[in-house]
Length: 57
Image (tube, rainbow, N blue to C red; front, side, top):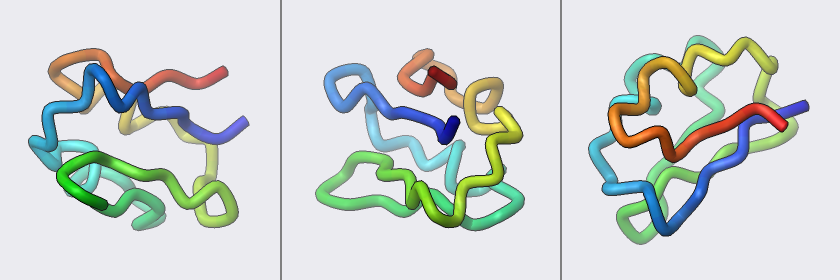
């Protein structure tokens, strides 16, 4: 399953964007958005997020 971003928790720090090996995360209106077709389900973004706004469900 692709990563899911909790928009309420996301503070727009872009840590996940920098760490994503498949470049599946982009910033839209200051929030991280995951391209589900590009996401490789690796979970790197979950560990990279300092505010725990990303999960793998």
